[in-house]
Length: 210
Image 1 (spheres, rainbow, N blue to C red):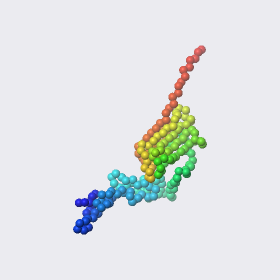
Image 2: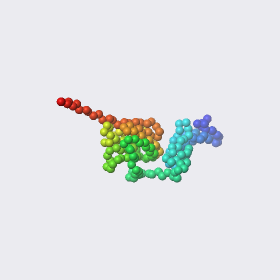
Image 3: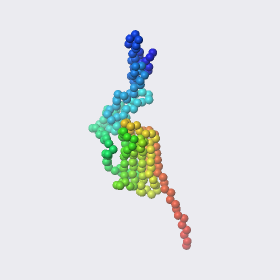
Image 4: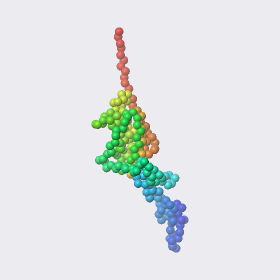
């Protein structure tokens, strides 16, 4: 029984044999396990992920759905995915009320371990409240500052994902902010939190004389 992983052995000649391998295996003795993502079953722009129990799952980019991300939402004719070479950027309207609360979800695919995904500031040059989403050595990093608008807090808050991203695959990042508290979640995984510090003011001890 030289064939492995459920392969069927048949005689090719008096002194040789041939293995017929089941789906997902290859090689002379069916010893090579093939990933279900080898055939690129997901539609263009989607990321194929191998499941532990077997099979695959397609992570669809924004605007697509279906088992293989082959369907486009009815209200969207086509999704245009911009691609940047390090010199370009996409400019959008400034987020309102960034100093109080917000929720942002960003999808991206990167071939580099470092770069800026998003920046929102109130002024130019940057000052006051801001929020930035960056890649630092492959880790997603959320940074925000309450600026000078809120006198009871100070300092830049930095929240880093617990795991680095995989190059060449699509990832989703969800960030939230409510006043001093912020959170970061990558690919629906562990949500990490951070909170800005409260300044402690010294109250002078005045002595009044009548």
